[in-house]
Length: 88
Image (tube, rainbow, N blue to C red):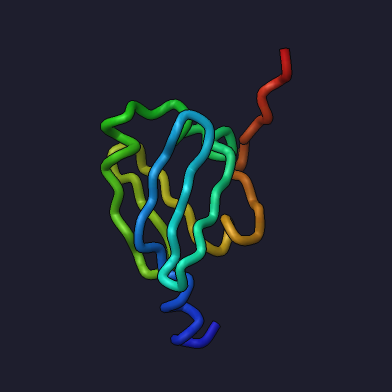
């Protein structure tokens, strides 16, 4: 990736709702992924989910030691050990 491309995919905002992680990128896109893709984030408290640090190419939740790269979001890669919930 060139420096310009890296700057465009830099995360500028993120939030979790009950089902999804939503990440806004510097170029205006919003990328969403199912929260179950990230078991540590899924099981975190609201306070832990809201303590976010932005890095040039990813997001860090320091209280739960969870780091998610923008590249993995864009490529649709769940975290290791993620399991889709079974439908009832």
